[in-house]
Amino acid sequence: DAKTTQPPSMDCAEGRAANLPCNHSTISGNEYVYWYRQIHSQGPQYIIHGLKNNETNEMASLIITEDRKSSTLILPHATLRDTAVYYCIVIKSGSARQLTFGSGTQLTVLP
Amino acid sequence: DAGVTQSPTHLIKTRGQQVTLRCSPISGHKSVSWYQQVLGQGPQFIFQYYEKEERGRGNFPDRFSARQFPNYSSELNVNALLLGDSALYLCASSLEVQGYNEQFFGPGTRLTVL
Image 1 (cartoon, chains in turn yellow, green):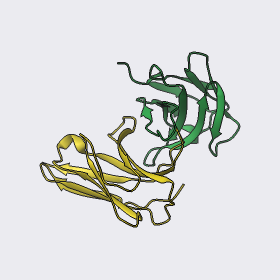
Image 2: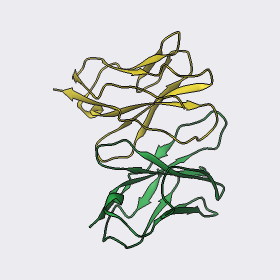
Image 3: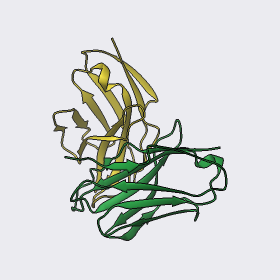
Image 4: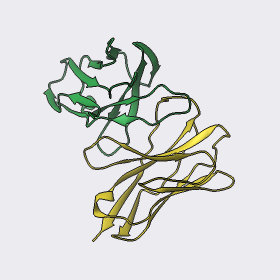
């Protein structure tokens, strides 16, 4: 699975959009981009995933560049409860594959 | 709808002892994975089981073993505990569907080795 690079930390004001970048320059054609988050002392939680098209669900939006070498997770209206470590993971197509977590981005939403 | 459950929530052991951690997947999920999360790091993959068969194993010593039961629940065993085994142990379950990689994590078992 391709390696990902994320900034170690970011701050965001409550109510504003949080844009979390991820670089995956070695991604191959059959690899998906998945985002998980981990709120302190809890298990990771799935947020969203995509292959090449932009995706949106009730939690977030995922924007993948045309060359697929990077992506951005967008939390449109961040709340204090969105403070967490966010992990960008690249996974080959398949099912229930093991997840390779990096260090992630610590997002702190400020009041 | 019950999520993934793990027991116990916390555990304290001493070096050299053995420990067994338990996980019950979401109803209908046949795949169970185990991860170790050391403080300050992301979770690291240990094992994956599907239909009682080991599907994958991470870079962990033979002191770590696991199994899956007919009801799809799972146990993780760690023998000869070391101080470095202190971590949050996470269990995740998933549907076995092609192209589906969403994994549902339990709250974890916090293991402290003294």
